[in-house]
Length: 406
Image (cartoon, rainbow, N blue to C red; front, side):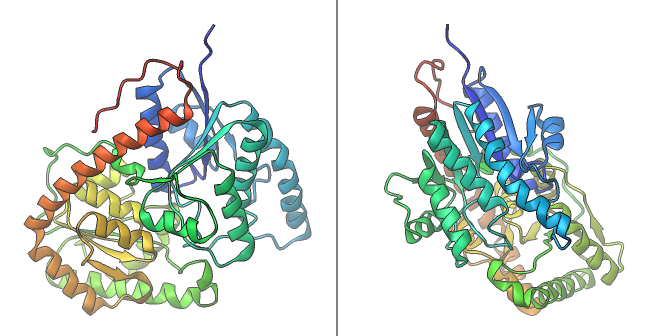
Protein backbone atom coordinates (compact mmCIF):
# COMPACT_ATOMS: atom_id res chain seq x y z
CA UNK A 1 0.00 0.00 0.00
CA UNK A 2 1.35 3.42 -0.97
CA UNK A 3 1.90 5.82 1.93
CA UNK A 4 1.67 9.61 1.76
CA UNK A 5 4.91 11.56 1.65
CA UNK A 6 5.64 13.22 4.98
CA UNK A 7 6.86 16.79 4.44
CA UNK A 8 8.28 19.07 7.12
CA UNK A 9 8.66 22.84 6.77
CA UNK A 10 11.38 24.55 8.80
CA UNK A 11 12.32 28.11 9.67
CA UNK A 12 11.56 31.31 11.55
CA UNK A 13 7.95 31.10 10.43
CA UNK A 14 5.00 32.61 12.28
CA UNK A 15 7.34 34.95 14.17
CA UNK A 16 6.01 38.23 12.78
CA UNK A 17 8.10 38.56 9.61
CA UNK A 18 5.74 38.84 6.64
CA UNK A 19 8.40 37.85 4.11
CA UNK A 20 9.17 34.57 5.88
CA UNK A 21 5.48 33.71 6.10
CA UNK A 22 5.03 34.65 2.44
CA UNK A 23 7.69 32.10 1.49
CA UNK A 24 5.86 29.50 3.58
CA UNK A 25 2.57 30.39 1.88
CA UNK A 26 4.19 29.97 -1.55
CA UNK A 27 5.55 26.50 -0.77
CA UNK A 28 2.28 25.39 0.81
CA UNK A 29 0.51 26.51 -2.37
CA UNK A 30 2.89 24.36 -4.40
CA UNK A 31 2.43 21.32 -2.14
CA UNK A 32 -1.35 21.58 -2.10
CA UNK A 33 -1.50 21.96 -5.89
CA UNK A 34 1.01 19.27 -6.89
CA UNK A 35 1.25 16.95 -3.87
CA UNK A 36 -2.20 17.17 -2.23
CA UNK A 37 -1.81 13.83 -0.45
CA UNK A 38 1.40 14.92 1.33
CA UNK A 39 1.19 15.10 5.12
CA UNK A 40 2.65 18.48 6.10
CA UNK A 41 3.73 20.00 9.42
CA UNK A 42 6.28 22.59 10.59
CA UNK A 43 9.11 23.14 13.06
CA UNK A 44 9.10 26.90 13.40
CA UNK A 45 9.44 30.05 15.47
CA UNK A 46 5.73 30.74 15.98
CA UNK A 47 3.86 27.41 15.89
CA UNK A 48 0.55 28.81 17.18
CA UNK A 49 0.49 31.49 14.47
CA UNK A 50 1.41 29.01 11.73
CA UNK A 51 -1.31 26.57 12.75
CA UNK A 52 -3.94 29.32 13.07
CA UNK A 53 -3.18 30.88 9.69
CA UNK A 54 -2.12 27.94 7.52
CA UNK A 55 -3.96 25.04 9.16
CA UNK A 56 -0.97 22.71 9.60
CA UNK A 57 0.40 21.19 12.83
CA UNK A 58 3.47 23.01 14.09
CA UNK A 59 6.12 22.52 16.77
CA UNK A 60 8.26 25.15 18.47
CA UNK A 61 11.72 25.49 16.88
CA UNK A 62 13.64 25.86 20.17
CA UNK A 63 13.10 24.05 23.45
CA UNK A 64 14.13 27.17 25.40
CA UNK A 65 11.42 29.79 24.95
CA UNK A 66 13.78 32.73 25.55
CA UNK A 67 16.22 31.74 22.78
CA UNK A 68 16.17 35.14 21.05
CA UNK A 69 16.21 37.26 24.21
CA UNK A 70 19.54 38.50 25.58
CA UNK A 71 20.57 36.31 28.50
CA UNK A 72 22.23 38.15 31.39
CA UNK A 73 21.19 36.20 34.47
CA UNK A 74 22.71 32.85 35.37
CA UNK A 75 19.37 31.05 35.04
CA UNK A 76 18.79 32.38 31.53
CA UNK A 77 22.33 31.51 30.44
CA UNK A 78 21.95 27.99 31.84
CA UNK A 79 18.57 27.66 30.13
CA UNK A 80 20.03 28.63 26.78
CA UNK A 81 22.93 26.22 27.20
CA UNK A 82 20.65 23.34 28.14
CA UNK A 83 18.39 24.24 25.24
CA UNK A 84 21.25 23.78 22.77
CA UNK A 85 21.69 20.20 23.98
CA UNK A 86 17.98 19.39 24.12
CA UNK A 87 17.47 20.77 20.60
CA UNK A 88 19.94 18.23 19.20
CA UNK A 89 17.55 15.43 20.14
CA UNK A 90 14.32 17.36 19.48
CA UNK A 91 15.45 18.30 15.97
CA UNK A 92 16.65 14.78 15.13
CA UNK A 93 13.38 13.24 16.40
CA UNK A 94 11.35 15.67 14.27
CA UNK A 95 13.46 15.11 11.16
CA UNK A 96 13.18 11.32 11.55
CA UNK A 97 9.39 11.54 11.13
CA UNK A 98 9.68 13.00 7.61
CA UNK A 99 10.62 11.91 4.11
CA UNK A 100 11.42 15.47 3.02
CA UNK A 101 12.11 18.71 4.91
CA UNK A 102 11.87 22.01 3.05
CA UNK A 103 13.35 25.31 4.20
CA UNK A 104 11.15 27.73 2.23
CA UNK A 105 13.08 30.75 1.03
CA UNK A 106 14.20 33.36 3.59
CA UNK A 107 17.76 34.63 4.06
CA UNK A 108 18.85 31.55 5.98
CA UNK A 109 22.42 31.58 4.63
CA UNK A 110 23.19 35.23 5.27
CA UNK A 111 23.93 37.63 8.13
CA UNK A 112 22.89 40.91 6.53
CA UNK A 113 21.00 41.69 9.74
CA UNK A 114 22.33 41.16 13.30
CA UNK A 115 22.66 37.43 13.94
CA UNK A 116 24.23 35.27 16.66
CA UNK A 117 25.76 31.95 15.56
CA UNK A 118 24.10 29.88 18.29
CA UNK A 119 20.61 31.05 17.37
CA UNK A 120 19.14 30.20 13.97
CA UNK A 121 22.46 29.21 12.25
CA UNK A 122 22.92 26.51 14.89
CA UNK A 123 19.30 25.35 14.47
CA UNK A 124 19.76 25.13 10.69
CA UNK A 125 22.95 23.12 11.12
CA UNK A 126 21.16 20.67 13.43
CA UNK A 127 18.45 20.27 10.81
CA UNK A 128 20.82 19.59 7.91
CA UNK A 129 23.09 17.30 9.94
CA UNK A 130 20.08 15.32 11.18
CA UNK A 131 18.82 15.00 7.63
CA UNK A 132 22.13 13.61 6.41
CA UNK A 133 22.46 11.17 9.34
CA UNK A 134 18.84 9.96 9.18
CA UNK A 135 18.61 9.96 5.36
CA UNK A 136 15.83 12.51 5.25
CA UNK A 137 16.14 14.82 2.26
CA UNK A 138 16.58 18.47 3.34
CA UNK A 139 15.98 21.11 0.69
CA UNK A 140 17.02 24.76 0.91
CA UNK A 141 14.57 26.19 -1.63
CA UNK A 142 15.02 29.66 -3.09
CA UNK A 143 17.08 30.84 -0.13
CA UNK A 144 19.18 33.96 0.24
CA UNK A 145 22.89 33.89 1.05
CA UNK A 146 25.74 36.33 1.59
CA UNK A 147 29.38 36.04 2.57
CA UNK A 148 29.72 36.00 6.36
CA UNK A 149 32.72 37.38 8.24
CA UNK A 150 32.00 35.89 11.68
CA UNK A 151 33.92 32.61 11.71
CA UNK A 152 31.47 30.58 13.88
CA UNK A 153 28.45 31.72 11.87
CA UNK A 154 30.28 31.20 8.58
CA UNK A 155 31.23 27.63 9.56
CA UNK A 156 27.68 26.71 10.62
CA UNK A 157 26.17 28.15 7.46
CA UNK A 158 28.74 26.51 5.19
CA UNK A 159 28.21 23.07 6.72
CA UNK A 160 24.44 23.46 6.65
CA UNK A 161 24.58 24.13 2.92
CA UNK A 162 26.98 21.25 2.29
CA UNK A 163 24.79 18.78 4.18
CA UNK A 164 21.54 19.73 2.43
CA UNK A 165 20.30 17.38 -0.29
CA UNK A 166 19.06 20.22 -2.50
CA UNK A 167 19.86 23.92 -2.80
CA UNK A 168 18.48 26.71 -4.94
CA UNK A 169 18.88 30.46 -4.53
CA UNK A 170 16.77 33.54 -5.05
CA UNK A 171 19.51 35.45 -6.86
CA UNK A 172 22.93 34.97 -8.44
CA UNK A 173 24.87 36.85 -5.69
CA UNK A 174 23.56 34.27 -3.19
CA UNK A 175 24.97 31.38 -5.20
CA UNK A 176 28.24 33.27 -5.70
CA UNK A 177 28.48 33.89 -1.95
CA UNK A 178 28.13 30.19 -1.13
CA UNK A 179 30.74 29.32 -3.74
CA UNK A 180 33.08 31.89 -2.15
CA UNK A 181 32.49 30.26 1.25
CA UNK A 182 33.61 26.87 -0.03
CA UNK A 183 30.36 25.18 -1.13
CA UNK A 184 30.23 23.34 -4.45
CA UNK A 185 27.38 25.11 -6.26
CA UNK A 186 27.86 23.43 -9.65
CA UNK A 187 24.40 21.84 -9.56
CA UNK A 188 22.62 24.65 -7.70
CA UNK A 189 20.09 26.73 -9.60
CA UNK A 190 18.90 30.34 -9.30
CA UNK A 191 15.20 31.24 -9.48
CA UNK A 192 13.19 34.33 -8.51
CA UNK A 193 12.08 34.67 -4.90
CA UNK A 194 9.28 32.29 -3.93
CA UNK A 195 6.98 35.23 -3.16
CA UNK A 196 6.70 35.91 -6.89
CA UNK A 197 4.51 32.77 -7.09
CA UNK A 198 1.86 34.24 -4.77
CA UNK A 199 -1.41 35.46 -6.33
CA UNK A 200 -1.37 39.09 -7.45
CA UNK A 201 -4.27 41.34 -6.32
CA UNK A 202 -6.91 41.82 -9.03
CA UNK A 203 -6.35 44.82 -11.29
CA UNK A 204 -9.94 45.90 -10.56
CA UNK A 205 -9.01 46.87 -7.00
CA UNK A 206 -9.95 50.49 -6.21
CA UNK A 207 -7.09 53.01 -6.46
CA UNK A 208 -5.91 54.98 -3.46
CA UNK A 209 -6.09 58.75 -3.08
CA UNK A 210 -4.44 60.74 -5.91
CA UNK A 211 -0.67 60.87 -5.60
CA UNK A 212 -0.49 58.18 -2.88
CA UNK A 213 3.03 57.11 -1.90
CA UNK A 214 3.50 53.88 0.07
CA UNK A 215 6.57 53.95 2.32
CA UNK A 216 7.76 50.58 3.59
CA UNK A 217 9.80 51.14 6.76
CA UNK A 218 12.18 48.98 8.75
CA UNK A 219 13.68 48.96 12.23
CA UNK A 220 17.05 49.15 10.56
CA UNK A 221 20.31 49.17 12.55
CA UNK A 222 22.74 47.88 9.94
CA UNK A 223 24.05 44.37 9.53
CA UNK A 224 25.90 41.83 11.62
CA UNK A 225 29.22 43.65 11.10
CA UNK A 226 27.74 47.05 12.06
CA UNK A 227 27.01 46.39 15.73
CA UNK A 228 29.48 49.03 16.95
CA UNK A 229 27.67 51.80 15.07
CA UNK A 230 24.16 50.37 15.00
CA UNK A 231 22.53 53.35 16.71
CA UNK A 232 24.28 55.82 14.42
CA UNK A 233 23.06 53.93 11.36
CA UNK A 234 19.52 53.77 12.72
CA UNK A 235 19.43 57.48 13.51
CA UNK A 236 20.69 58.42 10.06
CA UNK A 237 18.15 56.16 8.39
CA UNK A 238 15.29 57.49 10.52
CA UNK A 239 16.26 61.16 10.17
CA UNK A 240 16.59 60.86 6.39
CA UNK A 241 13.26 59.06 6.13
CA UNK A 242 11.47 61.67 8.23
CA UNK A 243 12.88 64.48 6.07
CA UNK A 244 11.70 62.65 2.97
CA UNK A 245 8.17 62.23 4.37
CA UNK A 246 8.03 65.91 5.36
CA UNK A 247 8.99 66.94 1.82
CA UNK A 248 6.21 64.79 0.35
CA UNK A 249 3.66 66.22 2.78
CA UNK A 250 4.70 69.78 1.90
CA UNK A 251 3.87 68.92 -1.72
CA UNK A 252 0.44 67.68 -0.61
CA UNK A 253 1.22 64.00 -1.23
CA UNK A 254 -0.55 61.41 0.96
CA UNK A 255 1.91 58.92 2.52
CA UNK A 256 0.98 55.44 3.73
CA UNK A 257 3.44 53.81 6.14
CA UNK A 258 3.82 50.04 5.88
CA UNK A 259 5.70 47.50 7.99
CA UNK A 260 7.15 44.09 7.17
CA UNK A 261 7.86 42.84 10.68
CA UNK A 262 6.43 43.47 14.14
CA UNK A 263 9.60 45.32 15.18
CA UNK A 264 8.97 47.99 12.51
CA UNK A 265 6.05 49.44 14.48
CA UNK A 266 8.48 51.61 16.50
CA UNK A 267 9.69 53.29 13.29
CA UNK A 268 6.11 54.00 12.21
CA UNK A 269 5.43 55.59 15.60
CA UNK A 270 8.56 57.76 15.34
CA UNK A 271 7.59 59.05 11.90
CA UNK A 272 3.99 59.78 12.92
CA UNK A 273 5.27 61.64 15.98
CA UNK A 274 7.73 63.71 13.92
CA UNK A 275 5.37 64.48 11.02
CA UNK A 276 2.04 65.54 12.47
CA UNK A 277 -0.18 65.60 9.39
CA UNK A 278 -3.45 63.92 8.34
CA UNK A 279 -1.72 63.12 5.04
CA UNK A 280 0.45 60.53 6.82
CA UNK A 281 -1.34 57.33 7.79
CA UNK A 282 -0.23 53.82 8.72
CA UNK A 283 -1.46 50.34 7.85
CA UNK A 284 -1.04 47.10 9.80
CA UNK A 285 -0.56 44.44 7.11
CA UNK A 286 -0.79 40.86 8.32
CA UNK A 287 0.51 39.20 5.15
CA UNK A 288 2.24 39.84 1.86
CA UNK A 289 -1.21 39.85 0.28
CA UNK A 290 -2.15 42.78 2.53
CA UNK A 291 1.04 44.56 1.49
CA UNK A 292 0.34 43.97 -2.18
CA UNK A 293 -3.20 45.32 -1.81
CA UNK A 294 -1.80 48.50 -0.24
CA UNK A 295 0.89 48.92 -2.88
CA UNK A 296 -1.39 48.20 -5.81
CA UNK A 297 -3.39 51.29 -4.81
CA UNK A 298 -0.32 53.56 -4.78
CA UNK A 299 1.27 55.59 -7.54
CA UNK A 300 4.77 54.98 -6.21
CA UNK A 301 6.46 52.92 -3.47
CA UNK A 302 9.63 53.57 -1.48
CA UNK A 303 10.72 50.59 0.64
CA UNK A 304 13.56 49.00 2.57
CA UNK A 305 12.59 45.43 3.39
CA UNK A 306 13.30 42.90 0.67
CA UNK A 307 9.81 41.45 0.58
CA UNK A 308 8.24 44.91 0.62
CA UNK A 309 10.16 45.53 -2.59
CA UNK A 310 8.90 42.26 -4.02
CA UNK A 311 5.29 43.20 -3.22
CA UNK A 312 5.63 46.50 -5.06
CA UNK A 313 7.38 44.90 -8.03
CA UNK A 314 4.85 42.09 -8.25
CA UNK A 315 1.93 44.53 -8.38
CA UNK A 316 3.71 46.48 -11.13
CA UNK A 317 4.06 49.61 -8.99
CA UNK A 318 7.25 51.66 -9.58
CA UNK A 319 9.44 51.37 -6.48
CA UNK A 320 12.54 53.09 -5.15
CA UNK A 321 14.64 50.76 -2.99
CA UNK A 322 16.56 51.72 0.14
CA UNK A 323 19.12 48.93 -0.12
CA UNK A 324 20.93 47.43 2.86
CA UNK A 325 22.31 44.31 1.16
CA UNK A 326 23.31 43.03 -2.27
CA UNK A 327 20.07 41.06 -2.51
CA UNK A 328 18.04 44.27 -2.90
CA UNK A 329 20.29 45.64 -5.65
CA UNK A 330 20.15 42.27 -7.45
CA UNK A 331 16.35 42.16 -7.20
CA UNK A 332 15.92 45.67 -8.56
CA UNK A 333 18.35 45.00 -11.41
CA UNK A 334 16.57 41.76 -12.33
CA UNK A 335 13.24 43.62 -12.52
CA UNK A 336 14.61 46.49 -14.62
CA UNK A 337 14.78 49.14 -11.89
CA UNK A 338 18.48 48.95 -11.07
CA UNK A 339 18.87 52.74 -11.41
CA UNK A 340 16.49 53.35 -8.51
CA UNK A 341 18.49 52.16 -5.51
CA UNK A 342 19.57 54.27 -2.54
CA UNK A 343 21.83 53.16 0.37
CA UNK A 344 19.84 52.51 3.55
CA UNK A 345 22.92 53.13 5.68
CA UNK A 346 23.36 56.66 4.29
CA UNK A 347 19.92 58.04 3.54
CA UNK A 348 20.26 61.47 1.92
CA UNK A 349 16.78 63.00 1.76
CA UNK A 350 17.67 65.45 -1.02
CA UNK A 351 19.18 62.75 -3.23
CA UNK A 352 16.28 60.44 -2.38
CA UNK A 353 13.81 63.08 -3.55
CA UNK A 354 15.72 63.48 -6.83
CA UNK A 355 15.57 59.74 -7.47
CA UNK A 356 11.90 59.64 -6.46
CA UNK A 357 10.99 62.34 -9.00
CA UNK A 358 13.01 60.62 -11.72
CA UNK A 359 11.19 57.39 -10.95
CA UNK A 360 7.79 59.05 -11.24
CA UNK A 361 8.68 60.62 -14.59
CA UNK A 362 9.28 57.12 -15.98
CA UNK A 363 6.26 55.55 -14.28
CA UNK A 364 4.36 54.42 -17.40
CA UNK A 365 7.48 52.91 -18.98
CA UNK A 366 8.46 51.10 -15.79
CA UNK A 367 4.99 49.66 -15.26
CA UNK A 368 5.24 48.04 -18.68
CA UNK A 369 8.72 46.73 -17.86
CA UNK A 370 7.42 45.19 -14.63
CA UNK A 371 4.56 43.47 -16.45
CA UNK A 372 7.08 41.75 -18.72
CA UNK A 373 9.55 40.89 -15.94
CA UNK A 374 6.79 39.45 -13.73
CA UNK A 375 5.72 37.16 -16.57
CA UNK A 376 9.28 35.83 -16.86
CA UNK A 377 9.53 35.37 -13.07
CA UNK A 378 6.33 33.31 -13.02
CA UNK A 379 7.69 31.02 -15.73
CA UNK A 380 11.01 30.57 -13.92
CA UNK A 381 9.26 29.68 -10.66
CA UNK A 382 7.14 27.09 -12.43
CA UNK A 383 10.45 25.50 -13.47
CA UNK A 384 11.67 25.71 -9.85
CA UNK A 385 8.69 23.75 -8.57
CA UNK A 386 9.01 21.17 -11.33
CA UNK A 387 12.68 20.65 -10.41
CA UNK A 388 11.73 20.36 -6.74
CA UNK A 389 9.20 17.61 -7.48
CA UNK A 390 11.68 15.69 -9.63
CA UNK A 391 14.44 15.90 -7.01
CA UNK A 392 12.61 15.44 -3.74
CA UNK A 393 9.48 13.42 -4.23
CA UNK A 394 9.32 9.69 -5.01
CA UNK A 395 8.30 8.85 -8.56
CA UNK A 396 5.27 6.95 -7.27
CA UNK A 397 4.01 9.87 -5.17
CA UNK A 398 1.42 10.65 -7.85
CA UNK A 399 1.16 11.41 -11.51
CA UNK A 400 2.74 14.83 -11.73
CA UNK A 401 0.95 17.51 -13.71
CA UNK A 402 3.18 20.54 -14.47
CA UNK A 403 2.09 23.58 -12.54
CA UNK A 404 0.83 26.51 -14.54
CA UNK A 405 2.51 29.86 -14.02
CA UNK A 406 0.21 32.20 -12.03
